[in-house]
Image (cartoon, rainbow, N blue to C red):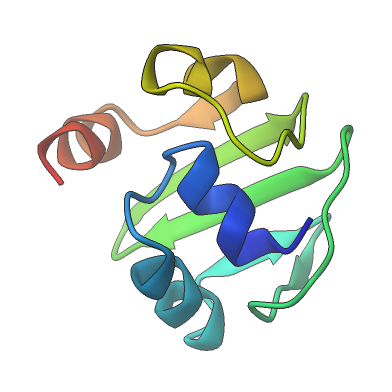
Length: 92
């Protein structure tokens, strides 16, 4: 699955266009490498998302094409997340 679609389906980023822009700007890495919007991801990959000074790292657990909103958090495991980043993500 493409990283921009994964970020949207998992609701780490709420809109695919925003996920696409974040990838194009170099704010998303997969396994330590800068990810383009079309970068493929699979279970076990480590995603890092940077929003300003806030940093979040997530391990991919599932790459389902569609999930319900209440099941989206089951697609990844939080490895490390800045507390202020979590509050920003919930407001978006």
